[in-house]
Image (tube, rainbow, N blue to C red; front, side):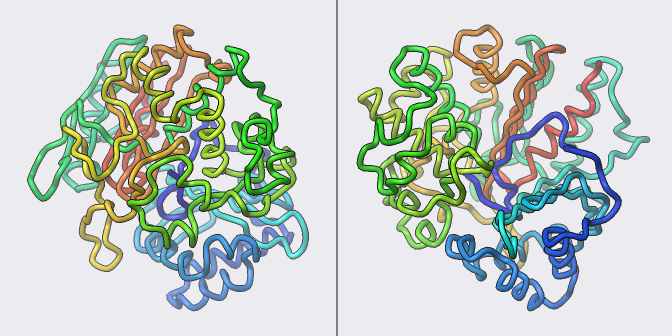
Length: 455
């Protein structure tokens, strides 16, 4: 699943985030002025300034998907967590996007990517936010480790510190060339009943499930049952948006270049969550909406696109999406604890998700925000061991992975869930972090461990 702002949009982590030549200050462009206004509103004690920002500087099409009140709610959560943002540097800027690094009041570094309309007035389309973590205390945690023993020791100390501060709950696994170096559970799977997390507890993966959908598509392509350049209409002739059906290809959907938007928005907010239980249940939430851009001309994160991929998998395979990935990916890989479990069914050893209450910052369950069942875009469950099995299958070539030559870095997050999975093929390290707390609980840990990996 993917959301925005404070819930750390289900993001694909890259091993290097900087693109282009960093700049010291914001560019003197319409996009740069929008970012300047956002930072001013963010740091103002007057929330009315942020309301005005969203009303006046957001693209009309984007406001239709996420109205001002919804944006203010997300901003409020982010404000409580970060308090203030001071520009550190501009990573990259074009007329369509600006990426900056900023420092929060706590000292943590935050990356914000602003995306804008392709024409005047270049209204805001969306903001992606990624917490890059607090500065490491050199005297305590240190820098890159000399060997695996030091890596494990630093990880243990770091996680003990976060758990004491109630900033982490979940499971962390570090492996090297298929063998575990470290695996430990922290916190509670059920806080009300004091049920602790275990190393085999099942956690919500958020958007990490997109990787399974991508794998399924490549399996079907290898079997000659579809082509990556095939348009949607070849498989879904009744797709509500005829323009999308004709222009959008499977490759566009895979690479987030389709122009199809998100299913999170007013319709999702209004829908009874218990009624969203199949791939077809997700389509009415977005499929009839206009394309956000001409397919292939831009890149924008799209949960909706991966729902369409799920529908195509069902059409081509003749079975439902959940059964297909279970029979063709999970079972062959020995991933017996991975599936899109329904939220209202009893599932042994499944962690409940906990999100901070906006008013008093106490933990409350995220049950009411969840659909009845996850989808091809995210929301399934897995364990750290099963994720390691999946990476081992990628590494050995058992399953197709044409885009993993340089490794893999993926994450998923929404209220009450955060997961990160990273694989560096050359040294052979795998990092799997699963958490049942708000982002960046897992991503923060994965990022720090990655920074410590011996070379």
